[in-house]
Length: 90
Image (cartoon, rainbow, N blue to C red; front, side):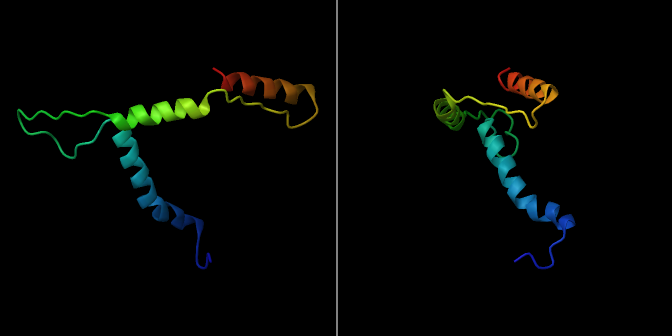
């Protein structure tokens, strides 16, 4: 399945996938038009994609809590876990 694969090839294999992610993120941020507008051209954009994604995400994530457990049974590990949990809620 992974014959001839080396980790150095990973960047080349991911270029198309990462390019697609960037295009979708640009669309989310309202960059729907390709190229620059011509002089005097008005480009009106209603970014419904961002509104819908934000609403759905807010609905799905409401009421979700995170818990961080200590990796070891020591005071230091429990303190680190508590700090990490506080950082998640900031």
